[in-house]
Image (cartoon, rainbow, N blue to C red; front, side, top):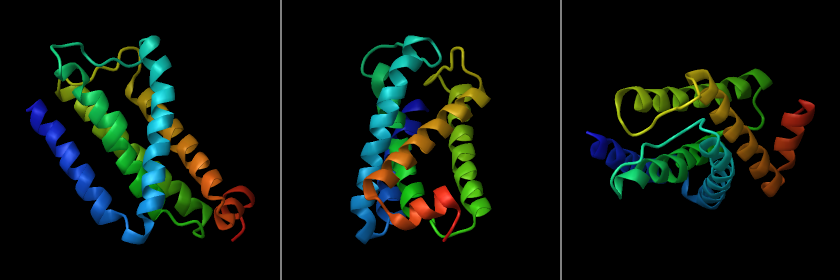
Length: 163
């Protein structure tokens, strides 16, 4: 069962990147993918060090399958899809709703994996702590991507609330 979940995440990740990111936006999507990976890596070090998250240690290679799949492939692909398809010129409430829906769905997926499989254990973190953690990852990655692309419409819309 666990191997099927991991294979499905890899398959849906590749298909999601190809199908939900327009071909002309692949460069932006790939940068968002790499940015999210970097932020996750920086945040995972203290999370695992202080016992907030843990991946059960089992016989290799299973001990590393889930962290590699979720943290360094599947969630970065989901962030890429989120980032490329977001609208800078929508109303503030629609952008906030879009952001929180993405974060909530990913947190729900993570909670289901933690509860019903042996792939992940939260340690000291609860479901709402994971929601805050994923919110932080998405927010910081989004700010870094906006800074990198220096899209004036995004900065005006997000900082000053104008279009």
